[in-house]
Length: 250
Image 1 (cartoon, rainbow, N blue to C red):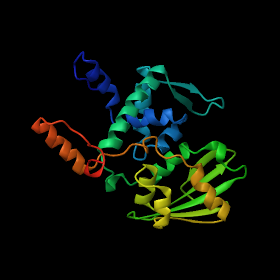
Image 2: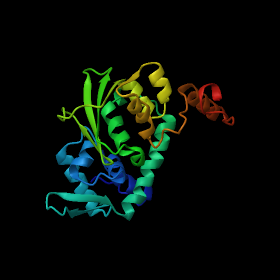
Image 3: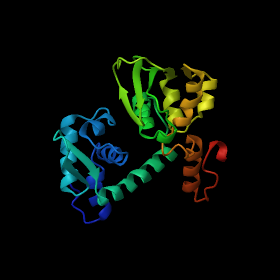
């Protein structure tokens, strides 16, 4: 781990937190990902080798702890008190990102939104019977298809056909699905404009949106680019900033 060589706690903290993938690993652990494969699934692009290195490093620093699984196959990982405290930095960073950063085309990975959605489902609202939902995402370089299995409150995302009859089919534009999950548009808007379409039994079509909890930052109203530029001009001119949030200062 490279250091800044400074006593400043911001510098010392950044040496750990600002390592690539570390914030996402901490986020995934906080969401309840306890196995190596679960942590990896929620971080597309992270290699197994690098994840192993990061987990070992975080263990040495007292941020993560692990224990062998009861069946002896692999380890179970969880945050220590120091790790849970560090997650507060993730929350602050997420609030800043939701407020000031736009969602660009390179951020429109529907799998990440689907994975996050599955970790935030209202478990008490899920049906008792097994449900299989197929998602077809459009608007990507290649169409993407996933299956969501729900059974006894547990969920699993499959990237290949699970061999079980599908109960609900959802076709969604990747951009619409991501922006709905991020809080940039409502479910009603996305379905009314047919950017997201559901096909299946009427009771399941009605029930599906009631199960879903969106991003933990979906409630944050982003600052528009125009408002941000206006605020910057006010600061340069030494004038007080008012009405920075929203389009036209509203």
